[in-house]
Image (tube, rainbow, N blue to C red; front, side, top):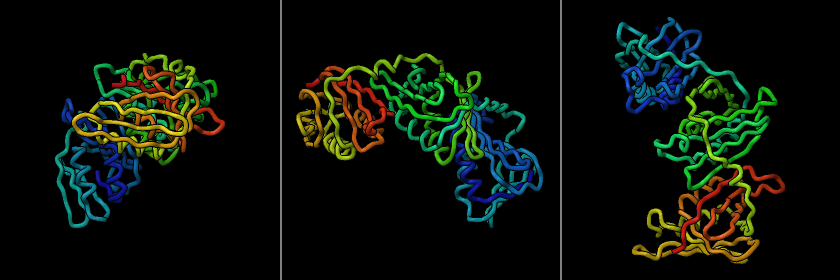
Length: 365
């Protein structure tokens, strides 16, 4: 193989593909990036659960393929001088030249690299910005505990031209509904996608339109020459919709930015996993935390309250995760009692709220 490629284009593609490389590969070849030169240059990574492939323009003098240690290639690529990069294979070595810099990298057997999964058929497309917003709002509610795989995923429910994404870690539920363009208008399907993968995909593909594909146990996402596949989780999930549509006797509307800033300040004196207390009265909410060995903090923020006065407490980070997911100037907190969960939602005027976040309250001390 012999190719010449723009340094910035190569570095960006290598970094994008290398993000799925396992930190502890079960076999050495899974630490490698597969470079295949034909009409274009493709860079692929695969760990049996997640695959990533980036395709870029390159001047190909000799077609071929080579398997290079991925993380090392990523480090080298981003440190090269601003010049074109030439990669030539010579026996068991790939020689990378850029300006006066030259690296000889020991390659791995291409034939040992596992066969990449086939991209399933596309079922529709989403704007990259909409996709990234929805994933960013929902993913914080997913669990990091791998002993319960269902809780580490994001549930994707597709019903015609509407998609709902939802996640839960048992202490909160986040859901976002948005429109998309299905290939078939009567599409109805559900899938559980690992949250960590969906977050990475959303970050990296937010610039353009994202094609969504679903097949037998596999989901695929593709945009602008970059594609990712991921093995799906078990489809079992809680009935989240009924828990987000309860009747609420108390409603408080508050401006998001000052409310979030005040909670962050007051929480500085809250010990880890202790409560931030919110006291809602007509026209204001009093935010309180601390009172133990560290100290205490209080702040007042304006709000519009409908219903009775209420004092309720939440784990500060859980509360902030819900509020920072709001994409409107106002957030609405729907409450029933100090011992019941509260529902946080955006206030988009006359439209139905797209984002809902149910969070457990804590016992007031």
